[in-house]
Length: 132
Image 1: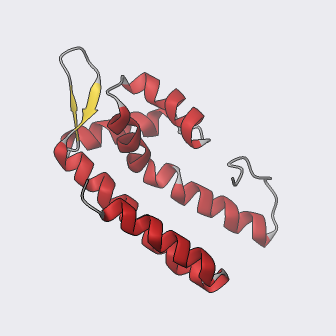
Image 2 (image 1 turned 135 degrees about the vertical axis):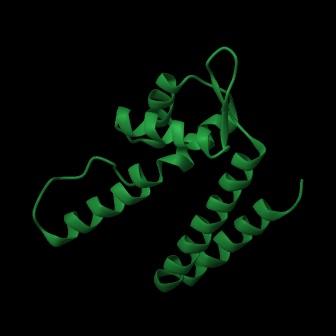
Image 3 (image 1 turned 180 degrees about the vertical axis):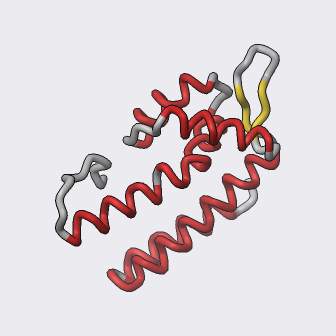
């Protein structure tokens, strides 16, 4: 697993990896929120802890709340009467599509590095897409 805690140096390698980490964590926080809510409804303040434990990064609090409110506004999650949030049908669809897209991107990148990885990932991706 790649560490989410990278050195803060000025060399090109670490700068590139740090930019990647921000882009696949904070800037796509909505995916992590939906994935968390797919497992069970929860309160927004609990999301931060769950995401930190499950996905190994600590989302900024204000950013997390902003994402939660935007997801609610867009109909991907909804607030229950007791203040918890749960994923909606549209949220499940968005999460599924995001997951497929990320897997396809990973496959394409991995194919440059190792064709055997692509073959295994493609098999896993096909299993995910099969109707249950």
